[in-house]
Length: 94
Image (tube, helix red, strand yellow):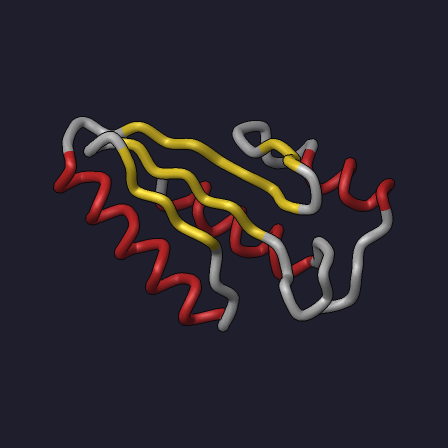
């Protein structure tokens, strides 16, 4: 589940996650919540999913109700299936 994806594979997988975009070597999603508590609760849910699959995004909670998730497989220095599995899980809980 950790091998590097080709550009074609990335394009295909990204097309299944309309709310995500590519920024350099990462996939990124920005979310806005009604308040800080909701944003923090979401971050904790993402953290639990990340722990479950042992794959951890960069998470930025900013402006009191905004969350940015940046995902890539650091050990591979590239995008892998693991990144898109985490994106799928994030989409389910968002």
